[in-house]
Image (tube, rainbow, N blue to C red):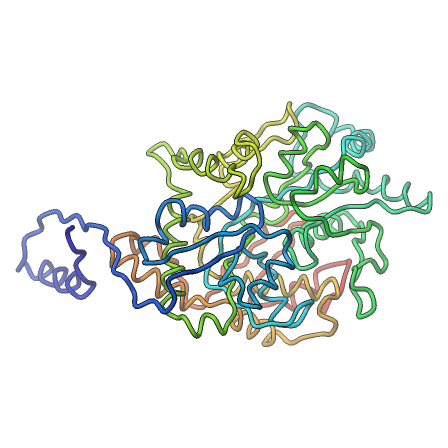
Length: 459
């Protein structure tokens, strides 16, 4: 196998070319992994049965872990708490995690432990689904929704009268989300609050987050969402795929919005390990990160017309019972660039699942800060914090230096081009107002962001 020239060799060649001292014959760098001096070669990673576990599954099934000298076992976990506990105890070396989990653990919301991430697994991928009966009432409240293809995004405004009707009967509308520090919790809260519906506050004595709530949110494991909705125990939920499309396939619910509309290109899952594990296994950590970056790139590969070329193979792998275990067709309906809201409303959504493009795999500090603002907004962080605290906490958890070291090796080995590596001076994304309520978020100004909201803590 042809060996990849080192970065030094390439720089010398470029310099000679600029001086006219070398011929400009076209050079194709071969791809060859240079094995790192890994500390631990047998690893076990945990995941939850969701399509966005794909980078871990693909890194295993397509041999990207093997190429790095890693023998990896991937094991489904029953829920997010068990998964986190497994990483903390050392039963798992690392895991597919909710973006909020490493942050919450590090600051002691729920379980206290130092968890870090060097890799964001994906963007987008969630939806909010309501029961058919709720959707019919929403259509009555807003006739513009009662058409085959209503205008998107669909806000929660038409849900308001239903919420009030429940309250007048001494009840509260029940909605599910997957975990108290999940993106799903913050997304459904954001969606409700943007329409003036109070989703409830966490307090030191109310760990359920239902103080002052107009709607009661409760935790339901992702694969159980459709049957919990069908049983009538909840009237709606926020979850990742394939469990919104499963409700459509079963004819029991209607997805009304996706998190792409709530916050365009929001980070969803991360790969998490304990800080201690990363410090004890630095070369292994680099090797794992390299394999995951390659898996993300494979998942987002397109042909000349922009069609995703590997997603159907990914869907077949994910549909296996030891992975997501949902029917291939259900997984495929969102993973291949479309999303079914209703049988009459099937939309092209090429960015519903993003695994590599938009610099998605880089661990942005600004992503961490956003989750911290939501923890503060809803009372999980019980007291005011300084802007410096938000910035430092993000740096404690997010480790772009590990990511960039892995990416540099992949460039040197010929698996990435330099323009595929994020170009950032400070690890913060530019400010954005791509939210359902149009509010502007700048990760460098968390306090200014919080001050914009009518519902929740403003500072």
